[in-house]
Amino acid sequence: MSARWWSAAAATKLDRVRSGVAEDVLAPARAAIERGEYGRCLRLLEPIVAAHAVTVPLGGRARMLMATALIGQGDSERAASCVRGLHGCADPELRRQARDLSLILEAPSLQRPENWSLTLPPIGAVESLQQRAMPLSQSRPGRRRAEDPPPPPVGPTRQPLGFALVVLAVLLLLMGLLGGCLRVETDLSLPAPGRLELSQSLTSTSGRWMPWQRQFASTLSADADLSRYKLSLEPEQGRLSISSGVVSAADATALLRRLALDAGELTGQALPAPDLNLQERNWLLGVHQQLGFELDLSQLQPLPGLSFQLRLRGLEPGAVRSAKPLAVEARPGGLNWPLQLGAINRLELRSWRWSRLGVGSLVIGLLLALSLVLQRLRRQAGFGWPELPSPQGPRLRARSDPDQSRG
Image (cartoon, rainbow, N blue to C red; front, side, top):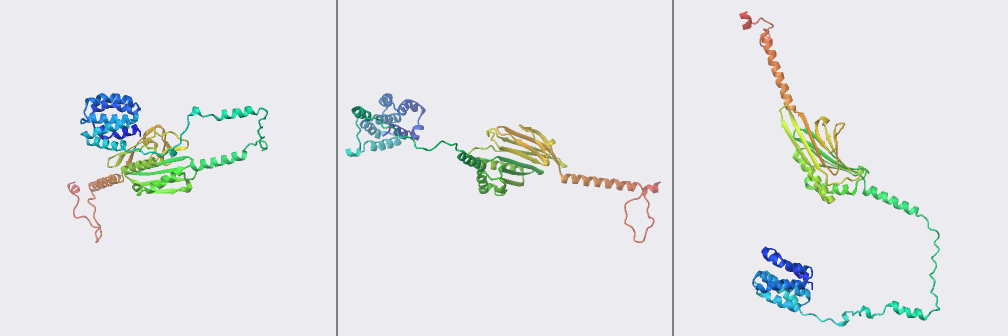
């Protein structure tokens, strides 16, 4: 029976909620039991047991530790006597532990037959095999030692070129199937004020799906939060993509964070969630947009063949206010921003988007003002208000312009 086991079982929640003073008094004794110094533990507990009765909580716990140390020394009788004294303790949990320990200590020991065990003689009393063989070798001095048989004729050793070629081919095949480069591309566009269009693709440069892509596709298909997005699977081209369509900025941010969460659960590494922030101010004629994107990749060390890119469609290089740590590259149809592994990537964009409704309203207002100015000039020229042609033919006006009559 192990005293350390019983000490660990006795350290219940009741002991941990006691006062800090009592724990400090019994801490040296507990440490001595954990180190196997049962004699020192008994010497530390004797003055505590003498100063506190069994009805006091500190005295009861001290006697339980003393019983544990006695068990460690092999003195089961004194341990049983110490445990029987705990039946008068006021703590019901301590009484229950004492009752359980008494059942173990007072259990009868079974007598085992002698043929159930094997008795080994002392090592020093047994004669070694070398000592037994020495007299035999000395008694036969004329006998020659048998020579070792010659090795079998197997011929000269050849270089294993064929085996090396097979191993190299297998290794290359495994590298092609299990390895491969992975390119993560995220397309982002601003089709309308307050709206974003997001799509993310994972492409293997080997032209085949990697095992990780296959597992990630199964995870995305089973995720209920991503059921409303379009998932495209192209195993023949090694491509996996998901598109959100035209959604709000909050939905696009939630999609990016969900993808990072699913990828982190699959790889067993917590991936940081991207931070996408879109702020807009409406000036009736147009909308001033400010887009901020941040992705912390400082915990992800650079790996060969792994790359992250953010492509911004429909934006000009003048919209970029800051891009760290790598610069934004101008491409046909938009911008391309490569992300750097092992660093914090930040991007800030500002752009102006004309409002069709505002511009149309302005054009209609200008045309209406121009029409009013032309009508006023027509009246001032003496033509009066526009009239419909008379069915009886042209005739003189019965009434002239007031300005002409005064002239």
